[in-house]
Length: 355
Image (tube, rainbow, N blue to C red):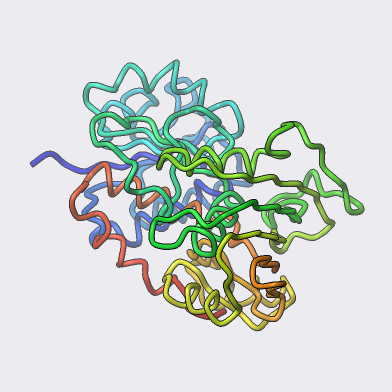
């Protein structure tokens, strides 16, 4: 049996925790080796690279950058294309646009001996869109070699739609309207912090922002055409994104039924908290290195049902946590298509019922 090697490209807000998570659970996940690509030798990043290497990950980079890494005490083991060539699955976690560039420059050359390639939410049209627990049934082995894990907020939005309005496969949705209240930047980032709340643009006449567009395309992989529209704004905090949702449904419901559906889904957490810092703090204290792996954290006090058919509320987005889970789920699907769902249950201690 061939060795199962997972290669992560990039060490940013998704790449770094993903590499660590894969290393920490590689035995349970049936992974033999984790490698990762770091592009630039920086002394400010040396500590995190050393930490990842101490957890078992193997460093790779461009051949011409070996000397730069060696000069700061880091020893790459493989050069860029060698690492891709020997990988079973490649997960691209690079900044916007780089994933597409890597696809054309590298990944397409190694389709013959790689199970699959994964990119993150910024890489629109990289491959079939995917979110764990939303459209797993649409995946086709050997056909879907390129997969795009949707953004963290698209995970949240899609999870709310599926659990409120799609009941036993039946489409009960009339329309869904959403406002993404986005945190300014990640706590690991020092630039691009906004000084005050900043409203976003509606660049898509049908869907508003990419969140509703991507969710609609996600559901379209299951032959569902949903009426979704989203807006977005950025606020001057680093804690968490918040989603405000307003769904109109055909068949009447009530809060008790909605909460029961949330409680039945292990990827949805509920909370009596209303402050983002408190939810963030829970993740810091109880998550995997701060990460909550649920798709969403619904604030129960914010829920309201009007006339039985209009459901409104707020929920918190676990930022990179839900994207991490989907990245690992799709990796396991590539490696173990018939048992991946049972394998990822090793992460279930980070699927919280309540936050």
